[in-house]
Image 1: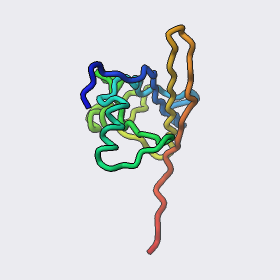
Image 2: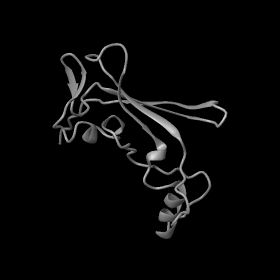
Image 3: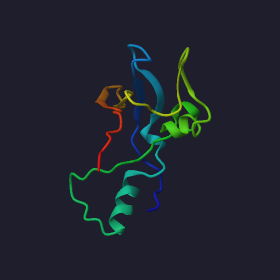
Image 4: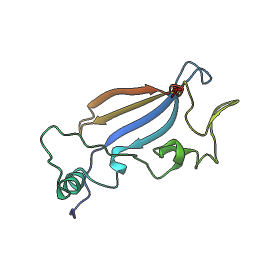
Length: 136
């Protein structure tokens, strides 16, 4: 689908890590924007529908990783730590190359109208739990 103008939504996105070794306040690891997507919403729909997907009203589309152009806006720990080669310095003695057990990831997002009215999407969070050993 070729568009005359690449259109997407201006949604400010932040990702934080909260953990015991970080302290009380979550640490912001990434700040990006939905407008950095390579594909637009109409292109998502076109791509899905030409492969035979039965799209119906209410279907959700996952955008995948949303990475900006500067290192602070990369969309995954793999990108942020440059494949684990450049640890993210959180504070003195605390760094991350990848998420670890006990880390809580918090994602936030909001948009603003042309008049400056903020529309928030709330937080989405999840905690990394240790692997569960299974006996066979």
